[in-house]
Length: 186
Ligand code: IMP
Image (tube, rainbow, N blue to C red; front, side):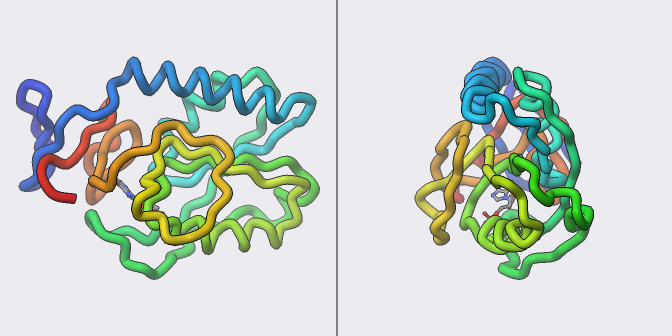
């Protein structure tokens, strides 16, 4: 059950406190869109949105780009509750042939341990894109265990669980307009 009291949000038995405001998110997304548009100038990119968490970020980022972009979706998962299960589930892989010889921008909500991208990126490379770049709204560098090339990062954050702006806790909290951080522990 999701309820909010003043600015704190409660999901199940956990309290989440405001962490990154709507204004800060939108300001940073405008900057990221400018960086991406410059880096990909002259290219027609294919934005590959990682469901479910990245759908809100991707919708705002893609509309802020100054370059033409096609959009498609993939869905993988490794999280149960607030912890990574360690196992990668392939719910919705990329459409066969879609990425071949294209400039692809993978749009992620958050890179935590890096497990998901460490498995997904090599699979996407097998689709033979002309280039494959990654844009993530959030990154927890302290806990990332894999050597990943993250081209565009919105915010580097500490190792605490966050929800909102597309990110969930057991599928709740995606609809919050800002990012909230779990109060107390990790
Ligand atoms: P990784 O494989 O550990 O890098 O985790 C990547 C995925 O786990 C993200 O795409 C999210 O779906 C989920 N995830 C990791 N940390 C958080 C968090 O703090 N809040 C919500 N989801 C998270």
